[in-house]
Length: 99
Image 1 (cartoon, rainbow, N blue to C red):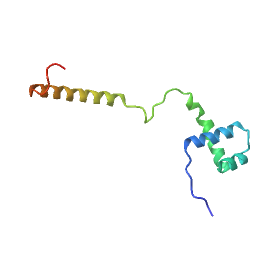
Image 2: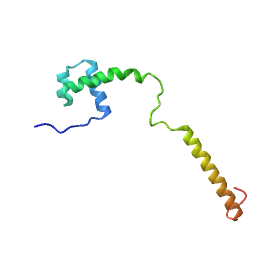
Image 3: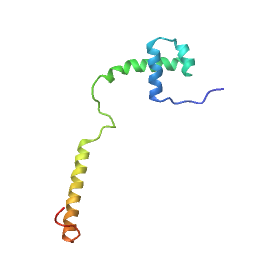
């Protein structure tokens, strides 16, 4: 009977790949230790070695970085809205001239 497909997180993959890279144990030992097929461990080790240079390549642009232009545009929009509301409330007598 086949086992249900599992999805491993990046942290787990990195831990297994680093253990394989150290070479303290064989792939078979690591396989039984982490309950992962030896071919999968070899693939993760290969990915670790090919992607290791990216760690030291400096800052990279990814989806988590804020879009500076969009943030400046939003700040400008909110400033205009605040100024408009401040003027409207001052004319209506709801906001004192002094803050």
